[in-house]
Image (cartoon, rainbow, N blue to C red; front, side, top):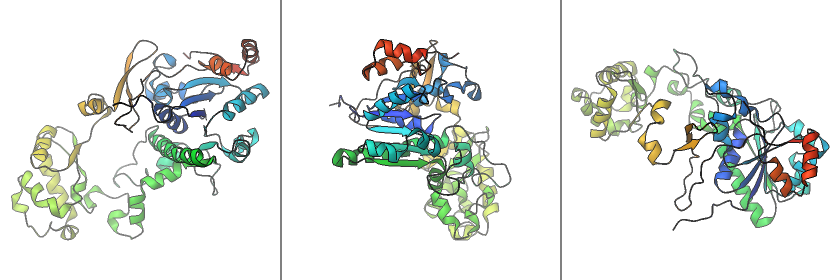
Length: 412
């Protein structure tokens, strides 16, 4: 039987965050049933204005990016620098279980929104904080973006490319989404303790630390000095040549994944028609391969290049060998596995266009996924939320007239 209630129904979340990591976290909490109120300045979250950076139309009519991070939320606008706007925000926080922000520490302290201040007033509050470089250390106050704190400083771009080429071109949101989901996991743990004890906590996840965690397996290996772990390296000199990509006859890239080199070597040689190499002591076992890496690389490269991608997939499937096609984004949008496993959903945008959107990756067996809707316009729920806080229509009108809040506005 399906559970009609989602896990976080009854939990109230206030988000005062911009761009991606914080909003990604609260979007997931909304998916789980939490009531999420996103508070924006009258200028709006900068993510609303990023269309041209992503090759899509400017404005709300077809804003897939803002929808991706903010579906399921109520969006209100408050000028929190004004007395009335700050008072309204305080009323929201007083009624919430979770407060999520990415405002830099000095700004939070000036506004009285830092954790020590809020915790003293609301001991049960769970405070979720997105940081660029963490709360301590010489760079704790630097601005952080996934391009800089995650990809660059965190050891991703500086290592994960062939030494004969240039660093990868980073994509927006890659590190942010990981931060957002890590932060959600910490918030859920803190919520559970707050439920049991009545005492909240501050949960911080930084882009920098997240990147270091994500490369941790190779980071710890790096300290032993083996040349194969001193990234960036040449693909021709990787310790296991059955762990890299090879180009097919029709220009695709096949990712082979055989960490158990000694176990699968014979089977792979048979599959590609090189039975003559079975038992060859230059290439087997893996310890012997280390003196013949480039020669073996050329053998595998040339054999894969004789076949199209479909042919190589058939060869690998028949031999029950692990591999993956290196898919393009266009291919993912059409991949039956992505659709049938629930990764993707269709959403109708404000201009009537039907767009493909991505769902969060945590799946429950007995809880229905929420309906995927376009995100709210700037200030779309301002009046509704303020009314629930006890403001009269006249008070709301006065706040809007004074620029302390704004009601629904469409961008573009």
